[in-house]
Image 1 (tube, rainbow, N blue to C red):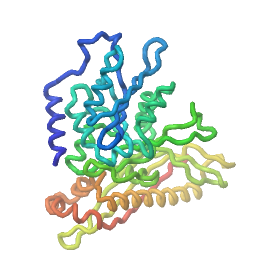
Image 2: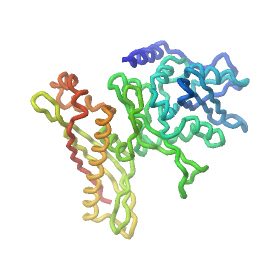
Image 3: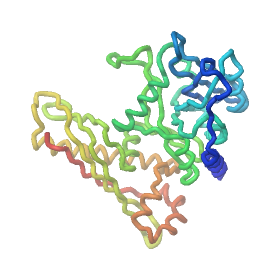
Image 4: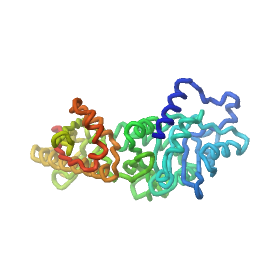
Length: 368
């Protein structure tokens, strides 16, 4: 695959121990870019937009944009503007517009693997429904996009939800598995009570499903939750379910354990049985109930099991329809039958879209 070349380039960069620090430039004349946006340009061109973080004194964040036939040429064009040296070695977040993601991520990943400044530890996001440039240009009007993205990344780890994906991880997934998941962002109109600083807010929008380097589609909220559960993730996420006295109960996920069993007809794999143990803690009750009674707790466990099972089925349906094993299911199920691993690897890609799925969820709500 073409991604083998990209991985080899990335490994070579690590082994050489190269540093991308701008030693030849005065620090007070250097602008450190923190976010890079890549969009489809006119025809076969690409538009690259870069935004700095907070700058010294009263200077506003610097936002530059350029269009060229390649990402490298666009970045070089930005570097020729003004008196300051533009440095891309501090880029921690890379946003890809939806149209560019549908054209393919290979040029971007190849550039990141080869470029002496950009780091493969930068996190990738796909912007749903608009261009990355729009978010970066709006950020230049006062809101700190780098800080917002960093906060979203931290919150995903602590509170559950679509996980950030480093460029290095995306490259490895595409090489080994042909598919990966990237977190999606969406620019939405602010609603009353959201505490937005402006007319719009930036929110997580599930996952972008990438196969062979190309965006195939987006998960909805339920399928994104299901993808996390299938991977044994989701700890920290807060779910809101109907609770006692027609109110709501907030449940925090405290543990997820998912196991797989393969179903064979002879030597042919035909299905998967998924068992998920989902542990939660009731963290808030609304309505008139002061505590969670036993009957209400059992009802919540039943509803939670139903929702979690439906979410995993929705995720699997989408992955199968897109022919994208975006969560490394082959590796997970092969652990259960290592003596059949070679046979499974041989038939997996043909069998995957037709596998039947049986899901069983054992949800528990800790007594409050």
